[in-house]
Image 1: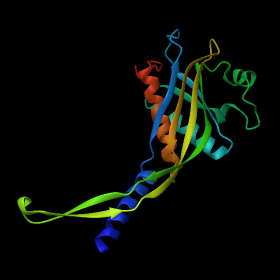
Image 2 (image 1 turned 90 degrees about the vertical axis):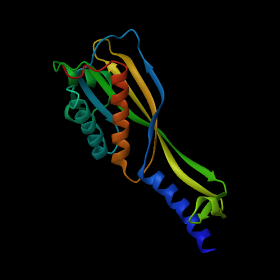
Image 3 (image 1 turned 120 degrees about the vertical axis):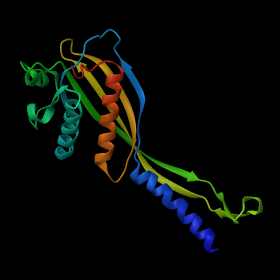
Image 4 (image 1 turned 30 degrees about the vertical axis):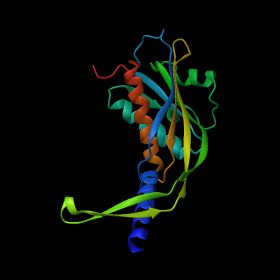
Length: 204
């Protein structure tokens, strides 16, 4: 009985660690305007987030990531007043004369709570000093439910010259107790995909 309880606790602990500490982000939809052939090297980043502290954290993190690729970027909070509505007119006024060639807008589309059932399983416990004479014991672990949240985000990039959408991605992230980790993963995925699509100028 002691070994059975121990095995079950190990499974529960492993599941909790995977959900809380190893948040994953993946692209579920991506689109690009194939007619666009430019390279972006000066980007205005706008995080459509109500909480101002989180908005600044997201925009600054994007600026840092782009900067590592020698791509200029400006956080939206520096050019757009807190009370400003994100309209074409306010954005055009904010970027006028600054050489900004693209606007990146990211926002949260929704949060889905997922409840997943983990069916009962059996764990083999091997004992013996020689493989030819090993004895196998089986311990059962009862089924249980895992609850977690899935965040769906949308990131769009607009060309300032044509004012048209040139790239869009929807992604999913597992919510975790470390929001900055989710932000970092989302930004890393975005930059990775923009590079793969050949949209970033990158280092000379």
